[in-house]
Image 1 (tube, rainbow over the protein chains, first blue to last red):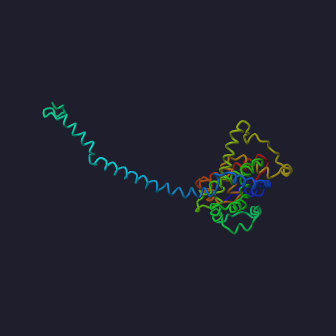
Image 2: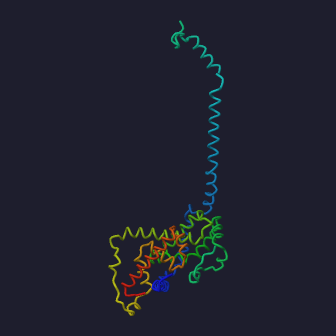
Image 3: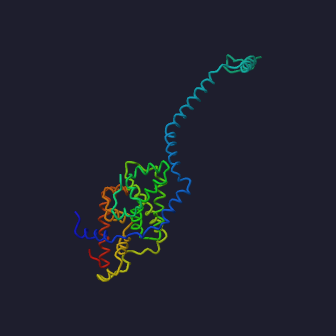
Length: 111
Length: 200
């Protein structure tokens, strides 16, 4: 419930509220020129951004998961892969030169 | 949803047929690249926006620049507009923010010359004096004595006849804050008018 003095105040404000001077014709032209001159303001691009955002939201996660699985599988197959012939030959050569000392449990040069 | 404006505001729209289409449809058409749809939105709302900007700033020198700024910001951020809100509320919020930015800039540059209300010249309590004064200017000066927060609430609620809930939504504050700002804003206006010899 408004007081009578408040009612009078509001009526006075309403009756004598400041009215803006008439808009110049340049205002609309200037605005649409500014919109047209700003390439970043392109509305079509804002639509494209909307299309990209859902991709970022869930497809990035999917790609990251795929990469992690790929790296894991690759590493696993690498560590369990058979020794190639060159490496085996090298190992055998090492074996012929060194032997484990039964007393110390360390590699030692074969005499 | 169509915005509810007074008949004087609607007179500023040059194309009445634009009222046939709802704001949300025009927003969608603008987002799909139709510039003419944005022109219709602009013509529909430019009157009330200019009035708000003018009453918030009472500076006709910057009125058109700030109005242009409002619509540029609207255009840039149109994709962020949520359909559940009323377009006019969203638009007025942007206009209010532009006015707030203007006051911040002006406040920084005019800090040394701003006068307290008590220092304003007091008119004689004379009807003749009042009749000589431009009453619109008097109301404009009265609004200038309010803080931007109080001024916005008085303008939106008392002059633009928006509901307290709508003003609360627009300014993103609780309804209780709007009631409080209205109370203190009106009280200050009454005091100022009394000091000018206008007893309401």
